[in-house]
View 1 (cartoon, helix red, strand yellow):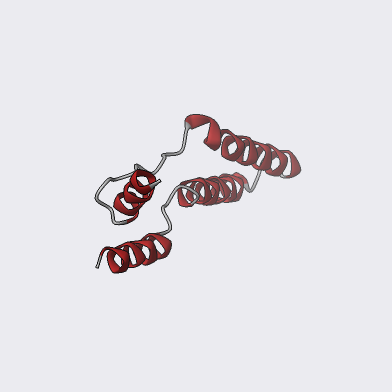
View 2 (cartoon, rainbow, N blue to C red; view 1 turned 60 degrees about the vertical axis):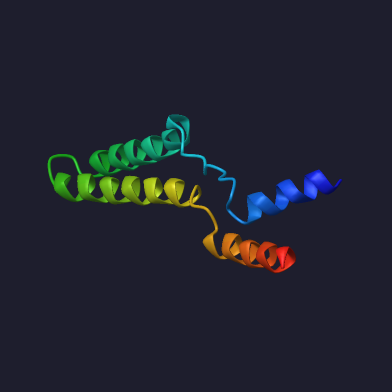
Amino acid sequence: MKTVSRFAGLVLAGQISLAAASPTASEFLPCHRLATTLLAQCLDATPGSGHELCWDSARRKHDACYEEVRASHVPDRKRIEAAKKVAEKNRN
């Protein structure tokens, strides 16, 4: 049990790094579907005109979706720092 708590302390103190996962290609597929659906609906609703607005709108939604996916993989820095402080306090 002491080994497990020592390992947990090392992990929390940042002495053993744990890699944050990166988004996979499949996590971006809903973004692609969203953008293509919005683009197709907009183009169908405005045949022959307004295409720049359709492309811009679809691109903004696509980019916002990508940002959400990336943000879901950012480590919680506040939680990590708090855990480090607790581990440091327990070592002393």
